[in-house]
Image 1 (tube, protein in one colour):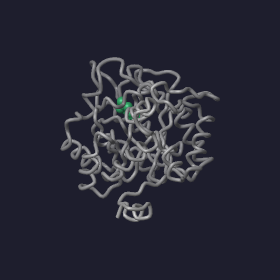
Image 2 (cartoon, rainbow, N blue to C red; image 1 turned 45 degrees about the horizontal axis):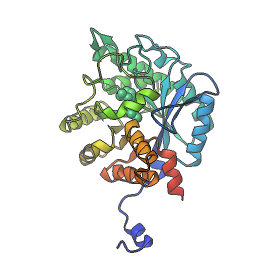
Image 3 (tube, rainbow, N blue to C red; image 1 turned 120 degrees about the vertical axis):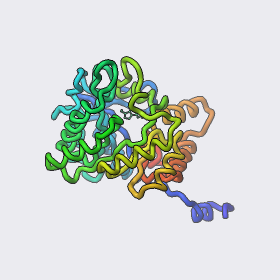
Image 4 (tube, rainbow, N blue to C red; image 1 turned 90 degrees about the vertical axis):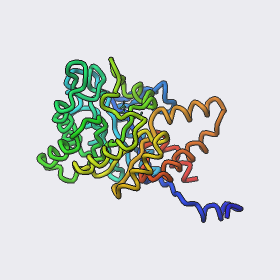
Length: 314
Ligand code: PBG
């Protein structure tokens, strides 16, 4: 059954298609900005005009979607840049919907990039105040919906945010904006390069009081259950490679779409090993993505989305 390429193709159990891939984009204000992210070779922060060139490539490769992260010019203690009508994410969502209606627009809903302290919520007495953060997140999600986002994706890990976002979206008339909840999200060392890209490293402490302990899987199932009960339309598991078991377990427990995020550190590891000549980059990319699909993910967010789609086209 493995003897020839034809037989291997016939008996392949797992398919990967560009439609299942989502490309993360880091957008900032201004024009003609393209700043390489040092820890992620091949990834840049861009202004909206430059970003549209990347989205054109994504659309040309028929990717399923893009997920937007914003980097504001200034940060404060309330994260006000996150819901600004003219923020980079809002401008980017409007522009993409206008020029590339064929590609789904997902927006990451979080406060870490917009807070002067870099935490994902409002901080009181040195720690994140879960309940005080919910209204702010809902407001951010509504501003993304207003700008045209198809799907809002809260990544903050506050309890109750999906319900808060759903009721705000409905109240504001955005009944058909979907919620992709980062439900099972570990406090992972593999987010390191992202914090460089999004300029969102916490100024003190870490995220372990709100993101999950990587030792826990049953807790992830409870998070998924809670978020679905609150109205999540799809579930994110993150990181992907270190959490294949979680993807599999969530798959057994729900029929909702599962999205897995192959995060910045997973990307950087493959890039670094390939740069050293230790592994074949293209093969490693395809194998890692196929493994994530095989574990049960319907959709994969990956910085390799265009590279993988190009490979699939070959
Ligand atoms: C925002 C957020 C993070 C990532 C996605 N959304 C960083 C974090 O939680 O610290 C990580 C993505 C990546 O590493 O590629 N909270």
